Image 1 (tube, rainbow, N blue to C red):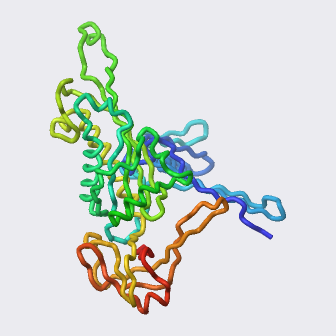
Image 2: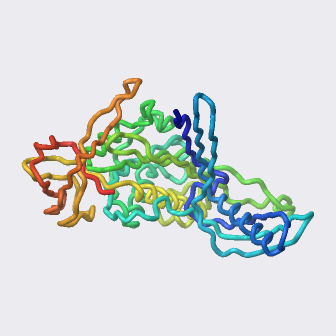
Length: 395
């Protein structure tokens, strides 16, 4: 009897840029043995160089072992990338010790996670307030409003992208002690407060975060003239934040990433700059922070774009369903949604898991109201035991 005893898949971040969706200029050298025609060796060396360049944006490693009668009969490891390469420039090529070498410079982009996705409904996302891990660091420049100002800026950026409908929940903080976030979660990386917030606002996902560091430090003086003249540079300020995305149905964490940058803080020490003000953005530090926030919004938007559209059923009567989805979701009369029943599954440690069961039924949208949608089934909801808190999904 043959069975799969191991299957693993992990994302290997070979470089720090692997976590982004932005282009990076890389320079690599490909090699191939010269064993026949020189043109063939050159072609193989070029393929090797392009493969190395693609690894710069991250690689996916999957392994599998097949066992037969307790003995490993097959052991395979597969390496794949999801990168796009453009603007390839050959810098050098030569034959050295029987090896053909090609050095290239190229732009490398990590390809979209789900380029084939055509589902265009806007998912409701509640953006909660961000915690400030070290409040005393916000005193200089009076940046205390960053706890609401930053997530409001993030929500506006997400809405501008058009892929999600971001709801302002910045007045609500999910973490009592931001220094330990997200340790407030359960052992299964689930945040119960995110479920309550999502239910309250009718959101499918919850975005939260923590500003870890706003420290100011004086850069070392460089250059002989600067040291002799005692030239004073503007202090450098750090910016480090964590961004989390939780599923509003189960509370499970879907996304966690740390963003960091720094920039010169040219504002006067007694200036009440405030976060996200014109004076703040005018500093070199503000410019760096704007870039990192734009990148974070793009990462969250890309991750959410790959998720299915889901909405709760708030009432089921006869063949009519009332669905908690606003007109901003983009649903239109005639659209079809698959119906799923929600339930609870307990694992071996008796930990609860949210389970969705496909009811092999479709609901056709009939009316789109400002705050809810009415859809109809092919038969009575009672026959399928469809009830409040079940879900409709569009993949």
